[in-house]
Length: 226
Image 1 (tube, rainbow, N blue to C red):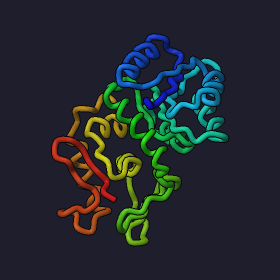
Image 2 (image 1 turned 60 degrees about the vertical axis):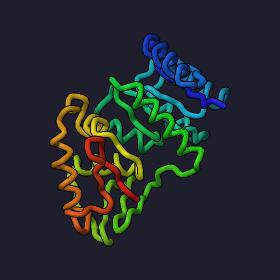
Image 3 (image 1 turned 90 degrees about the horizontal axis):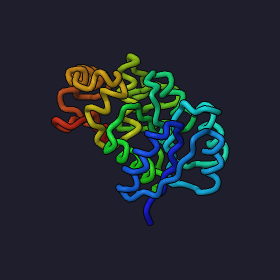
Image 4 (image 1 turned 135 degrees about the horizontal axis):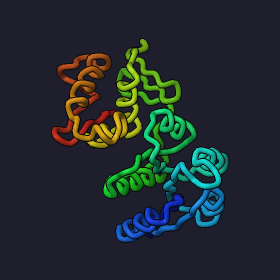
């Protein structure tokens, strides 16, 4: 049976374009134009995943997300023009499974939706505290410890590590990291990634020259190997 998605957005042109692409990819599509309609639709159609815009006409998307998490565990992928780190942190802390900023590539969005559904079906969402070898990554407190000792990371280093941790064991593409950590205007600044992955390895790997956990997939992206 094909998966179902609820698109919650008040931009008719965007909803129409998303609906066409998602149906072409085999999804069942439901839509809602405001927060009240979104909550009602989740209860009625029980979608496999919700694609939620934050800028809704009646309720802020974060209010919708918080209300939803009181009674539903449906995966939620936030789709928003808000690119600030605080907005992402707030949405993820409220229970969003992923955060995609506009503009976006439809292929990447489809992959994020599929991943959210897979995690829900497997019953293995990213834990609040993730243990990777000697590392303990605390998502809620935004801290990481190595061999039981807290490691001080800059906000950018943490954002990079957190993105990898939320996709542990999966390749995170270079452009996605640049867009989500630095912003959409930095998608061609690949040297940022080399600098920051080197800094993270120096702080978190036992042997930075031969990393065990923070791995590079040449020309593609990076993986936090569990």
